[in-house]
Image 1 (cartoon, rainbow, N blue to C red):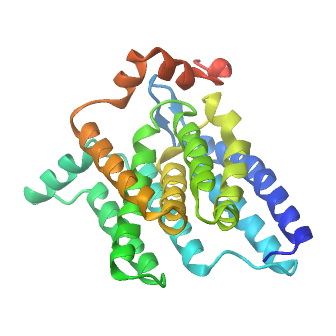
Image 2 (image 1 turned 90 degrees about the vertical axis):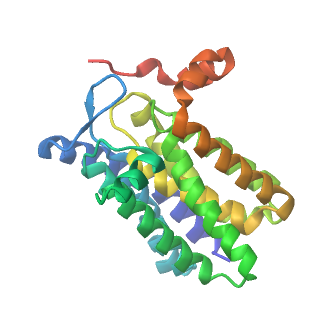
Length: 277
């Protein structure tokens, strides 16, 4: 258990670090010319993912040095690994999209960055799940939950703030439904408050969450679900994630959201400061 002062300081440093580092990285990306067009074609830096990871690590380091305990090394390895793979995807421009596109290219003898990312994500997930003191079936389910959750949040990262809203909802749901809400909250709360800190930058379209941030937050949801949800919830969640991926191979989430008045209103919530110019 992390002592209360250490935990409080760590939770304070996480959002402050994420927000401050985020603005610095946005300026850094602008100077480098490292940007990607958003859904309106506006070039934006995918700077919020690295800010989330660095803010989280700052809080974890502070907690440990103040006499508390940092998250298990396996968790830090998974967070950093998925964030790195997303950062790679953010910095490499590639036209091929989706599992069908990347595996189709491989069948034609063409290796893509997306396939390499998927393969490395599988290895990282297997290493993490293999470290868990769980039966083989639970380890396999944990691997699938992490992989599918990480990519699912990436599928939602198509409009300002959309992926963050899904993460907020998913994280609170995992904590609420968890068999042990305390450990689930301890796992997800630092990322939740870090995500809240960078949300204004995402909603205003000043920067993008990018694959780095989406993969990190999605993997966190997968870990939370794998470790803390009862089996009666894990199995339906896996089926929902598989169905979502199959749907996105042939259709568009944005079209579904735009056709629903409720979903469209939620999608636009908080985007009144979005910069179009």
